[in-house]
Length: 284
Image 1 (cartoon, rainbow, N blue to C red):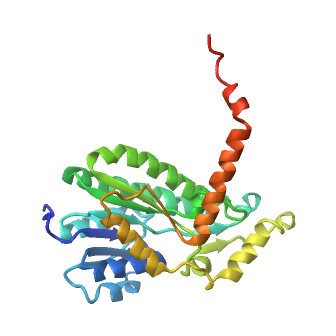
Image 2 (cartoon, rainbow, N blue to C red):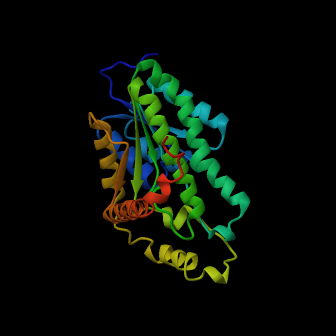
Image 3 (spheres, rainbow, N blue to C red):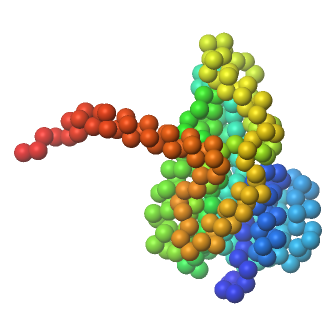
């Protein structure tokens, strides 16, 4: 079934039970778009779609299950005919210094934050290619650009999303498909309270680094400057733009951190330029 070009675009959003995903699903539907909202517990999202029986679909989805992923995409395509905007939002954090990390916890987080995201992109791309249009929105983080103590493994999943998305944008751009990385600073969602796993056995040597960061995250929960509804509006604005960005940092704190990271990086590049250039074979 081909999507009519004058029909409202279809959004497929993962992780809609709380936070960014929930706010975005609600705003998309209020805007008149169609939406397949997904969550592991379908009961948590039924209220979102109840008022929009023709434009909304609630789907149970654990993104790490390839069978559920296939079924969820098939359900959305069966109801709406196509997926125009894929928003990879599902994910969680793990708080541990690198030495404190548990291999099983790290691999499980990568399965959700990176491998499931990549699998969903592969499943949705053929339809977008066939129609010659589409938009893939990957929810990264300022932590995908700037590493922080106690969050190294989480940072690693988001750095991986950044690298994949940058390559993907170059591959699918000529095919009419946009890619955008959303890089939020701390936002007032349940992420820091509900979606971060904390390791159980801290090492005293990291009390002033990873330990201090861990305490700061706990203390700041519920006080973050970022508004998830305004973030949702920003993501919709990106989709509606004729020239959407590859990167969009959200929040003043994030903007300051990224700018400082870039300045620091450029300072280091300039300082070591002579050594950098000396690594090439001498010119004849």
